[in-house]
Amino acid sequence: MNSILDSRPDLTKVINDVAEVTGYLWQNGWAERNGGNITVNITEFVDAEMAAMPAIAPIQPIGKTLPFLKGKYFYAKGTGKRMRDLARLPMQNGAIIRICDDCASYEIIADEPVMPTSELPSHLALQNYLLETGSCYKATLHTHPIELVAMSHNERFLRPDEMTRVLWSMIPETLAFAPLGIGIVPYTLPGSVELADATLEQIRHHDVVLWEKHGTVAVGKDIMDAFDQTDVLCKAAKIYMCARLMGFEPDGMTPEAVREVQQVFNLPTKRPC
Ligand code: 13P
Ligand code: ZN
Image 1 (cartoon, protein in one colour):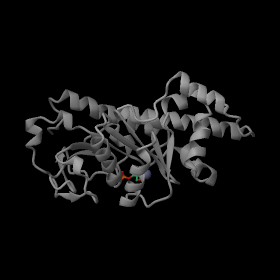
Image 2 (tube, protein in one colour):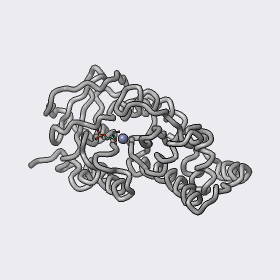
Image 3 (cartoon, helix red, strand yellow):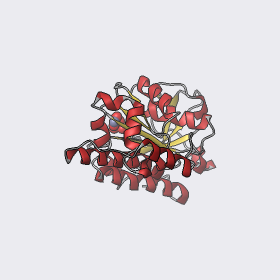
Image 4 (cartoon, rainbow, N blue to C red):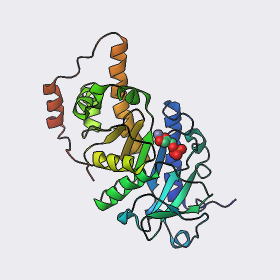
């Protein structure tokens, strides 16, 4: 069967990167069953032939009107699809969608009529924000990292400043590579527009957003970058939990040591692009 990826090496590379990352998600234990989802803005790879492709399934509503997405193209994981299957067969477990001119609905153009993820409102709200702000970021990743989700079951870690402080103080690299820290969204129904709106508010000022008792959402220049953002924070959570398992509350780096890293490495206070 023909694929939209045939004779499109640049697009194929981006989809293969998604497939590589979904393998990592599964190996990390973050992607039980159909857990987690991904979108990548692939508009830059759309040629005239692709732009002329008809919809292969009925038009569907997004649930939100997102003006900066008009005519944009995304690869999205399919709803109910497994990350571990997507790792082998990305075009059977995901779809390429085009946002319609009303900016409130989308159509599927390839390869198969796979319905995109139920978290599409959150992903597309973030994609709209990235385009609105002229960001170079293209990828959004929602996953279920065990340690971070476990921490979200405790009231102490639902305070975003406290959660960020603890994670930053576990290892200097967390601070260096997640300098905006982690935002928190109180428990909200999966797939809802309310969850999308709350996530958008938090991602403006944070590298990663933690959905209470559910998972994380990260944005990245590409899917590897979005994975790294999540991985760096999850590493800090693992160190915290290892210390607790050894029977003590970890000291953490001192506030002075944290400030020193921030100053010496001149860490950004907003997203670099
Ligand atoms: P989908 O299978 O619809 O992508 O949902 C998975 C998930 O993690 C919902 O939050
Ligand atoms: Zn989820």
